[in-house]
Image (cartoon, rainbow, N blue to C red; front, top):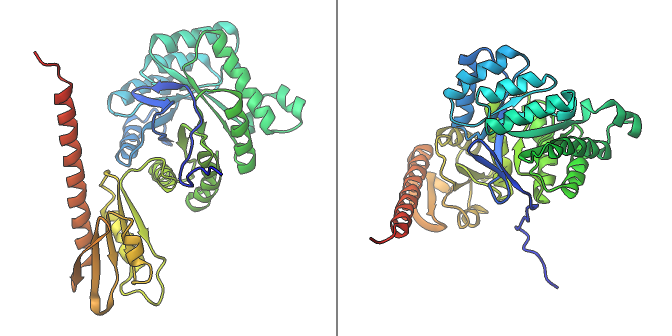
Length: 381
């Protein structure tokens, strides 16, 4: 019997669109995004929040445009940031046009909510003229009244039908540069809706569990729902919706993708929960290490294990490993191989130095390979 490798995730095949310079769908990496919570008209505060999200790896940031002043403020915001900006539009079609003119890379909008076919046509024209893609954003809490009457309550079928109705409006206007989301705060409802939508179309999907809660509860809830979808190959871009700082959404999003082997950024720390066998304070050491290593973007694995029971086995699978030993003498592994002992030295400083050195070596090797490839691609005169 043929068995699929247990680590292999087969992603759903979807068409690809561009959100500014970021490809979404197809074979592109799953992008991670968040949303600002500052008043958009406060350009300084909004830019600062976007730049903070960029520093922890945000690929895309969404900004709300509830009024004309906010939509026009995007012009100043876009000039000062590097990531593509999605303008969050709900009902007024003119806000979408103004946001496109102000430099938004994508419009989050439900075309069925903005009025007549003429208004939809104007928004589509603006999107085409200014190179904007769109996101159709269906939410269980704001489904159309006719669908609620038809189905009696928010359900997966109603959400998929809403999404496909909105998609048809754009298709009828010869516009297909869009992605779709069908979010709900209920994990079961959201997962079932995304599964139905994945079968109904080949558009890229923006996945999320909306209004998931605070940092801890929201992370758990989102991990369950998004984990189920990602594991089954569904999802081209993600947002973890937390009542927390937007940077936390990005960090949690990357941790989800790293856990499933779908995308890696920065140092992945593999550590034991600690017990009476530990030969150093594992919990405190890992807490400080995660802070000290947060600036590193190179994908690396670091194992920090308090004793020799599981330490050597974990170290064999990581780039750098530490196994705690007696008499304050610990074993260091490099690329899975025993390398040297660490005695009476600061564990954190030593590991940070090793990780930074390894990251620099990896980046240098990557740069050399890219330079060699570029040289080979230059045609001979």
